[in-house]
Length: 80
Image (tube, rainbow, N blue to C red; front, side):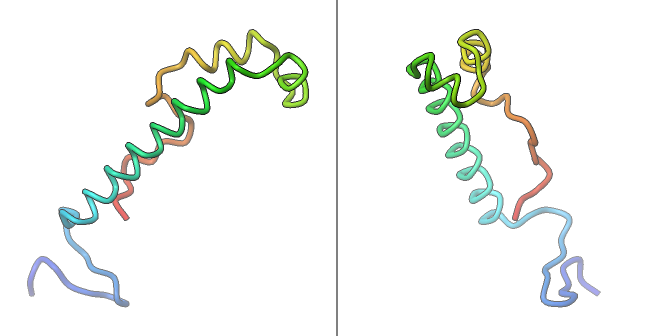
């Protein structure tokens, strides 16, 4: 048996294929850019718009100050 087999059409390997790892990294960078952009946009919202979202100006400022990589629900173990 080889180290790579297919079971039910799914490829098994200890190391993810380079293509899937590259695609994963591209998705991560794109997500980080979106996070940074939306956090900057929070600072531009009016008090009325923040109220509609259920946020205070202080909560929006705190969220905007978080680093772009600090996101909830990180899934670093997924290379699909």
